[in-house]
Amino acid sequence: MRQSILRFKWDVMVSVALSRPQVIAAPMTEIEKRYHSLQMEEEQERSLLCDFELKSRHDEKLLAKRAELEREGKELSELDEQIGLANSIIQDEWNRRGEQLVKSLKLDNPRSQENSDERSLQRMLDRKLLLIVQQRFGHDNYKSPWILPQLKHKSGETLRETAERCIRQTADDVKASLYGNAPYPRPLSERLEKEGAKLFFFNAVLAPTSSFSPNEKE
Image 1: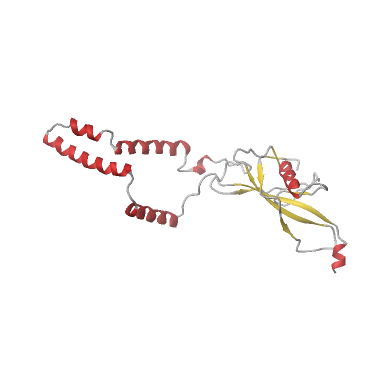
Image 2: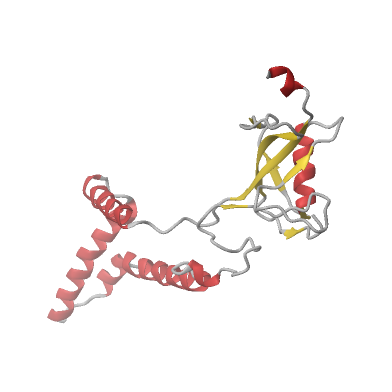
């Protein structure tokens, strides 16, 4: 049996798992929200106060004193000078700017600004995307099932160089980083009495500024 297997011809193929990482954080689940709330409560109870928080408490006392003096009709100029710019005013301004930022970037509903085109990188921003393709493998009338991009190894080049060539042929002007020089080998589970291929996998990640335009010919 072993001798018959050695007679077969095996092509060396390289496949690339090309992914686009998450761009924004995924929304928290209900369990994560409850846990986050508990953590914030514990942080509030156990942590030391920072200078801003200490001043906020001091401002509250001064503002309460000011309200009392105002009811009594007393002079407030000296107390107003002590209060200066209250932290509550600063915090209100921060909250207003934060709300404007969330609204302008649509952070409260990120899916509303996504591109519905399945080839676009501007979709499912809170999830990792993995590229799958249908390849022709040199035959105009053929389309493979949906697979990871793969390419036949050429004599004289390293497997990494084949992986880089595979990325270039899959999409035009795409920028990606390959992880490592050693691929993940996958021996074929079935050895039939015909020509076959040994497939080696590489992992690659798209650059943040990369555009993506599939090569229709391939």
